Image 1 (cartoon, protein in one colour):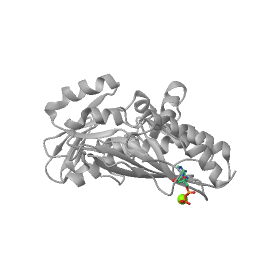
Image 2 (image 1 turned 90 degrees about the vertical axis):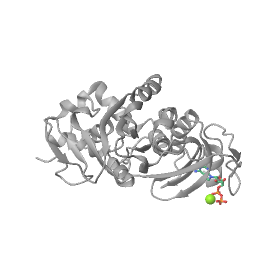
Image 3 (image 1 turned 30 degrees about the horizontal axis):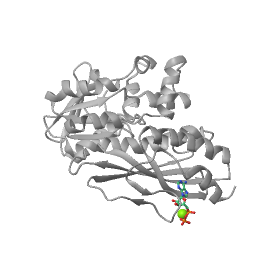
Length: 320
Ligand code: ADP
Ligand code: MG
């Protein structure tokens, strides 16, 4: 198949038509209508053997590359609108493209995203998406918005995607429903777009967890020029994660494994009930896991009340 027939057949109408788009795929460039909102632009790449294994399902790759971009838009409080897609393929593999576009298209349609352009080339397998979303002027949520006195909340459950990765690397034994749930979380993450839009007015700061809770939390405290107290016994981890190992490094793994695509949120402690009420219809749990404090010294408060320094990397995150 030629490059052009591939584009025409698979990429010309993907996702759902978005009113912002005046001209989509097909010309030298796409055209967006002017509008009175601010636009948030995000970009993420996934490369074979780096972000996904050789032989990963094309459908999963298509889903995930858009999902991780939508997760960034969610963390900014933006409503997704459009995406562009660069695909580099080692060979003319039409079956792979068809499956990939199915995965990409399903989630695009689900979130009202229109594919408006891209590039198709031969090369090592990789996919790159740029996505755009809209936010009312001045209402975007930044990493830098946390202040001493804010509570730290996290959506959903942490560590399940990491468990799947650990399983695939023969680090953990998992089976049955737990295994399939963890695999699902790794391969087909669900970005917290609806959740973020529901509570945007209450979020003072936010970041999505892609690199691991600890790493992303440190990004947030650095940007916000404050510190955090994180409580081990409050962390929303599954029974599976608890059971998999009682070893100290199990928690370390869960807090640094990444791929959660949950949101870390700074908000007033007084808004907790309202936050939870707004998220309940979306079946999204919200857990208060800590508080932001003045200074630079972030700590993890262990189950036995010991306080250990919290840093993004290094083997003594949690002390011994
Ligand atoms: P040009 O050579 O002018 O850059 P291309 O042949 O690369 O044009 O692309 C033709 C049209 O197809 C453009 O509108 C481009 O945005 C779109 N396109 C190419 N590849 C993709 C893709 N993978 N996904 C979406 N649109 C694509
Ligand atoms: Mg081109």
